[in-house]
Length: 305
Image 1 (cartoon, helix red, strand yellow):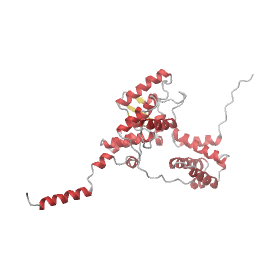
Image 2 (cartoon, one colour):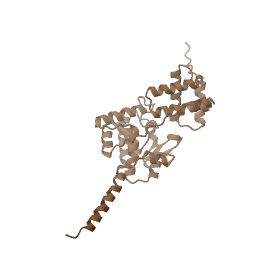
Image 3 (tube, one colour):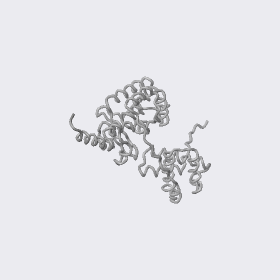
Image 4 (cartoon, helix red, strand yellow):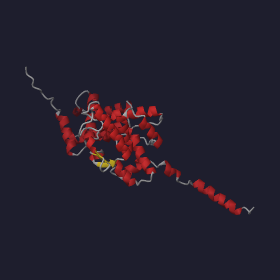
């Protein structure tokens, strides 16, 4: 009996795109997202994506809007397809035909310290409590939390090593004593379950060989918020934003927050961290100053009693 195992051939077009992304230094997470967006287009077309016309791309984008896709999903798709058509296929006219959508400017949700504590306590199990603790305690993006390795936790220097973050940049994140203790609790429990291995994922997924998915972390946050009675719209990114805002309220220099968040430009941090409640409360409004001035004038004009 012939037991020869034949490997599934890699799609040449996909391989070419992967090589293009690798040569341009795109991070693994970005590469996965780009491939996923191209697959979605192919599924919509029902044929290979390199056969698409400008009208096909227009129909696909209309389909995304009609299905209620978020601005981030649409713009992520535009970035991926612009790379595919502009870089890999050298069809600039198709890349230029893709239209990004404007993100609605909404006030970002921020949890209070008390709400953040309730959310973590309501997390469905120690693994999710530790993962969400990293998102809030170190300000990591959900993809960065998911792709942490055990070796990324440096308890000697009290740092978390974030490799290949957004933009392919490595950085060090904050590791507080409380967060380290929470991670040690998860480490002990993970070892007991038999899912923690040397040099492996800090937060394994359904299989210990794969990392936890961003979708699983999103579901965990929403479940915890419901149990904790938090009515705000929350996601793992809410924890990252709360981390930045709470540091701002502690008068931490915005340039330090920029480094901790991994922002290339301080403008991004300035937009990301809305003016904190404490800062607003510390401002004296012009009407208050006017009334105080008027009261002072009245006291001066009134004869002594």
